[in-house]
Image (tube, rainbow, N blue to C red; front, side, top):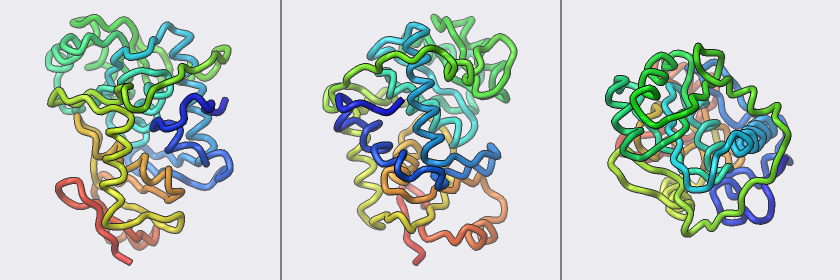
Length: 257
């Protein structure tokens, strides 16, 4: 299932419009999660899972909590929500169940996407909120396996207005439209001018902000490779992947070569 013409100008269209032609080239290496996502696989899973969410009752403008621990999981979850017409609410994975439940209640979320290592916290949070379904990127007790969304009968994805449709609800209460998120991607790109030959090394982790979402979206839209590293031997990782751009403090990018 490919994004349709009705998604023109949205984050989904801008990030993934050339993904199929880039095929199996790696788009995102998630070292902490242990996954490598090729362009075709990434766009296919996002659009199929979005269709699955719609089949399971997701509606345009509904807020979906994203409580995950890795860059790869956040990328799949956020873009799946956006493709389904929802608003992704990234949540700091360090928060406890009561704090997560309070945030989910405040934004009236009915769905929560998580990872197996955070599933226990996520299900406890769901019980203390109006969340009715917890989706886990991997098998977890009392959660719907994300992979099951890929097997549901495909259905049409909603047409979205890039300027009016919200994309993200941040931890500080700000809402970013699709156009706002694309503007943040462009802002990140200004000092470096990413190209298909670039390899971006990021140490940013999932949280309640937009920087990691914008960075991965920018990298994929440009045809670059994003390597998400939680720490460790950064010089060694940089050498191994021939890194050309790195993330810096304050949500900035720096070109090495």
